[in-house]
Image 1 (cartoon, one colour):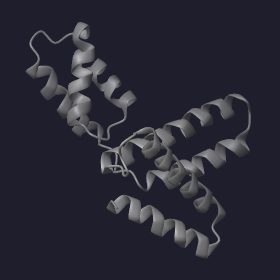
Image 2 (cartoon, one colour; image 1 turned 30 degrees about the horizontal axis):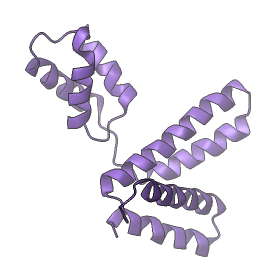
Image 3 (cartoon, one colour; image 1 turned 90 degrees about the vertical axis):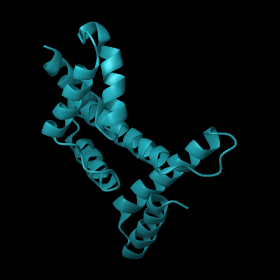
Image 4 (cartoon, helix red, strand yellow; image 1 turned 180 degrees about the horizontal axis):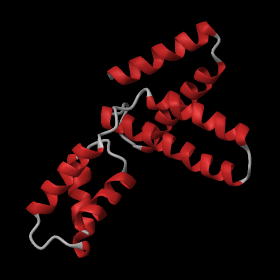
Length: 149
């Protein structure tokens, strides 16, 4: 069992002992999503750290999308709930890369590609995302556009 999965299970047990309903529901949901991912990957019985991170990022993205929808609908109570869940999930993700670090990576990739321009945006994005593991795609996209302009 991976270290992250062990940590998730231990935190689930702690949430049960402490009767922390929010943590408990978020961790149960996350573990269920991880089990669903294992099921969808036929032939595998466990996930790698990167696959676990991808599932957590996916769950955070779902909640961020929900926040936008709830704000548009004027449901501040649900916005607060989703933000609390995002905060819990973010504890299991690595710290976000600073803007300066991201810009450095983007500039390295752009300088390594001959004739780098907006026409090669997809190629640049692919290489930057590979080097900047864990970086937010929207942040990377904005930085690539900034550097290319």
